[in-house]
Amino acid sequence: MKIQLQNNVDSRIATISKSIANNLENNAKFVSDKTDTATNVTVLQPPVPFKDCEYVFLNSSFVAKCARVKAGDVALNKITLTTNDDSYDSIIPAIEKNIAKNQTEIYNMLVDYYYAGLGILEYAYNETDFMLRQIPVNTCRIIIVSFDKQQCYLLEQKIQSKTNYFKIMGEKYPENFTTYNKQTLGDVCLLGGDNLYEFFSVPLWVQEKDKIFTEIAIGSRNYNTISNGNLATGVLHINLEPQLINQQSFDDEGNPIKELSREEIISDELMQTDSGIAVIFTESNRDSNFDFIKIENDNYSYLESQQEKAETATLNCYNIPLARLMINTEKESMNSNKTQSIWEIYTLDLQTEQVKVKDIIADLIYDLYSIEVDVDIEVPIFSDRREIEINNLINEWNNGLLTLKQTITGLAEYTSVINLAEYDFTINPELWDYRKLDGYYDILNEDNLIKLDEIESEINEIKYL
Image (tube, rainbow, N blue to C red; front, top):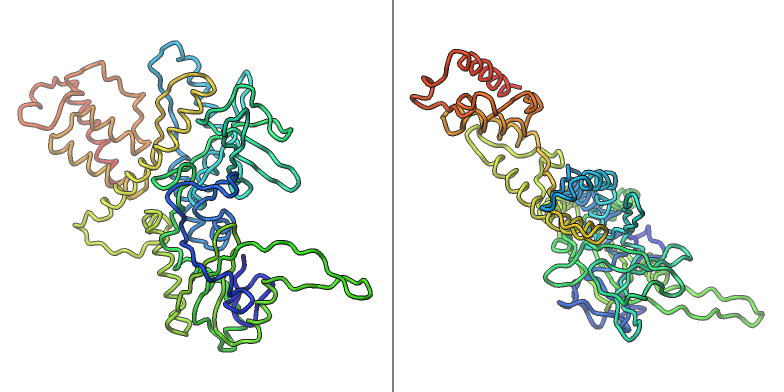
């Protein structure tokens, strides 16, 4: 899929013309029906073709950045496992170590999920440990096959001339179903599925697809064309059904005749016009459709404003604060708690997103070890949130709302200055249960009063770090 403007076209560009008019008679929605459907009862169609998703990821810096940031904030944090069965206590640390060793693969799977609506993780096991490997979603499709009169879902991966097949974790298969097309079946777990689809999720950027396609087209403009005064006045996105490959034709002397492709014919037609239309051409196994986005003003500053709107819209799709991408344009009064609220909302959103990853890890460990575990993933602590939480804890301590133990334990989460290993809360419980309230001060003996002064001094220093 390519984007070009006017005189700088290539063999992939397209516009409305007689050569494709028949393909555009029946428009289709960008997102398909509510249930997964199959082509020829063998291939499940995702809501957006992976080829189109890959193009958006590679050409929209904000979609790519949002996918990577969200994946990192969700998965690249400490992961801990717990189980109610004490007999597995010696095994759990080794499994945690394996998870940490493969955490980058989980992150890569999430990046695919956030731009394409599906993440794929292959897993393999030996006597000592297990290994995870992300499989690029753009190399795969989900197919339906029959084995012993049973319909089974498989993941098919094609890389160059090689095809691999995988069983999907959570699906049921006959016991003797170990190979397909003479290929040994591997194992994968899929991250996907929503209220519309079983296996796939609608990519988050879809809601703002028009703005994003406009941004891509403007960003790919040809500066020579612009310098000649030929600015785009609109963006046309056309989705065509793939063309069947015709047999080679020859002339009377036996020489092969070069036949122009549909894209090349359209390119020639567009080069001979001065339409001022930037075109996005995509191809997929879906009904033909097209979208036209009018750029109402033909000047450079207006095009830049359209890009900014697309960037803001993309951030909103992913629920990422501007400051998370190191964009600080917000002004806030000293007494405002707007920043705190934004980080709290973002943190809650990350915790919701982590549920999907927790479920995959728990299911994977059960599949490999038959051990039921609870999975916990920490959320990142951002500098603004760190300062806010520290100040809140110190204020609550100063107002007698927290005991000394609660204050120290809480502050240890947000600063490395406090090392909990240096505190023994089993000794002098009256000191650790102390809180700043009338009458409490009198219950402490002289040694505890000295210790309290030392700790209070440390707490006050933390506020200004």
